[in-house]
Amino acid sequence: MKLLYPFGYGLSYTTFTLAGMKAWRDEENLYASVIAKNTGKLEGSEVVQMYVGAADSKVKRPEYVLKDFRKIRLDAGEEKEVKLVCPIREMAYFDEGRNEFVVEFSIPYEVYVGTSSLREELWVRKV
Image (cartoon, rainbow, N blue to C red; front, side):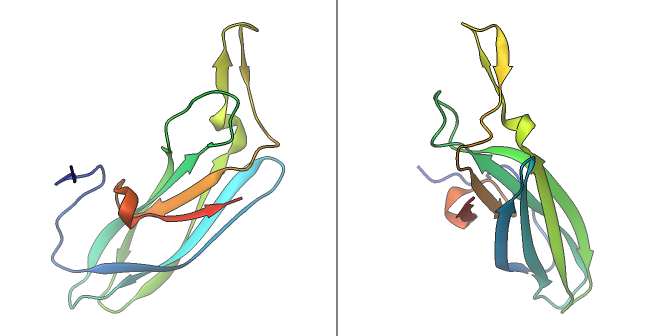
């Protein structure tokens, strides 16, 4: 069943596109950038969202979780690079056997970027 109103869904008097997604990481953070463009005839605002997944985790997790977002305002025809970040420590899970949070620094993560939570409309890169 397709959601009619996924998280982040909004109505606007203009339209937006995202292009050129990049994702990378360093020892402590996951990063993403994308070019957002107002393709309509009026100025408007949009929220670019970053979700992160951990399919290779030692424990079962949700496919992806919201970790960062930026609200941007663009004039008609304007485009802007949007950068997002997620500290890897924020992807920790609680290990009941050890009674502590565990951070999996060495596994690959999936970085998703879009304007809503709808999976079919998210860009994804493994880092």
